[in-house]
Image (cartoon, rainbow, N blue to C red):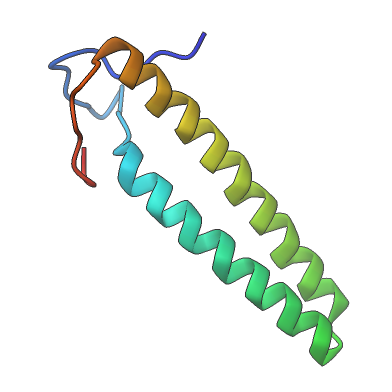
Amino acid sequence: MTRSQPRGARGTVGHAYSALNLRLALASFGLVTMVAFAVLAAWVGLPWLAVVCGVLAVVAVVDMVVVQRRRAARRREEPGVRHSLFE
């Protein structure tokens, strides 16, 4: 089971916590950008670059799934609490 950040806990160098909403926004931007670059690279005739961009797009999707699972766990633990983009 995926757990959210413990209540009141702050990240440290040894045990960092992620700003989930910001991470989701950045992963979404990365997905859109890499898909666009992959299509552009394929259209220009650079298949190796299209593959690299496609792999990075898949990484962004996996990151988005992980973040959504952690956000769902946080919502279960803290019902009704709204978090800002940087929390």
